[in-house]
Length: 213
Image (cartoon, rainbow, N blue to C red):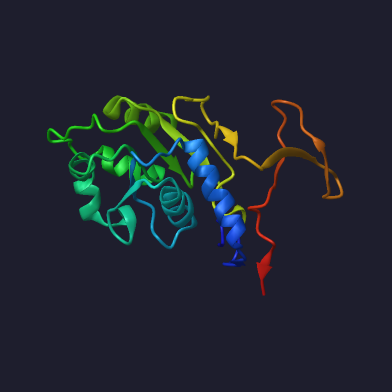
């Protein structure tokens, strides 16, 4: 991972960490064996491998892999709604930019009654995009918050909980998320009060043991 400000770094993962994160995705996402989820995140992406795939496997749900590159494939963008309807996908979503791209594609009579929940992550969701998704599908986009250093998942909305604008829902089980006050010396202090701005800290068995090299 390199984020947006640094050079690429190797993040160590553990089997336990990935499984804890993936199980959290199952429980928070309400995934069951009756679901079919769209595999729209690239398979080399932590979101595509953990919440997009491993969570689905743990639940015994179906996974509709649209292409190895996810919705980076123009053909998959154009065929998104047709494939969702054809394979009766109940859990659909992608990163916000890809959601915007598929929402520009005409439905052409695709039956979207199979959809029960939408999901998005990797970037903040523009409110207008969330409203448009709801208009097209009848469902809200549940936001997922995570990072490679936390095995891909930290917090997410549960189905039916639309949350507030700019919210990423609830922390995963076994996960502690605290926003701390930054001190003048660069160290983190006490937890912030509601509406105070601070530094997000995450503790849990899915947090990486550190960077390699």
